[in-house]
Image (cartoon, rainbow, N blue to C red; front, side):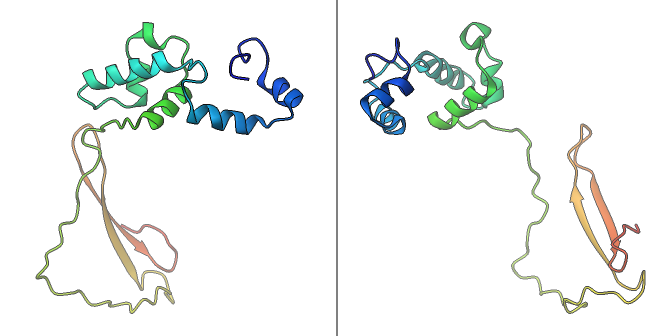
Length: 154
């Protein structure tokens, strides 16, 4: 089937030979030398581009690399090959560590005793903070939420 698949559909050959297509493709994935690999050139170009980028390019940057290598290739195909090759891109400044716990600090008491039901609005308020990445840096957003109405009050 591997020798004839360039001139005949695999589905038709599998039906005539009473064999499963899935089994053929599994055999082909275990024996890459058995059939022609149409993505071999693309794989080697991806590895070369990833290596020259100091291993920081991901699928999107690889796809938009040298146009001669990736003409007509979809982002889906590049992502699939990237996963197959084990290539991982690096996102600069993607996260900010917001909490550094102090091992010697005393534990804080749970003043609500896990009872989050509030009888009237503004009786119980809870708060939280988060950091937002912007072009200016990492500003902090602090909120206060009313447990009765579930609305942000401050």
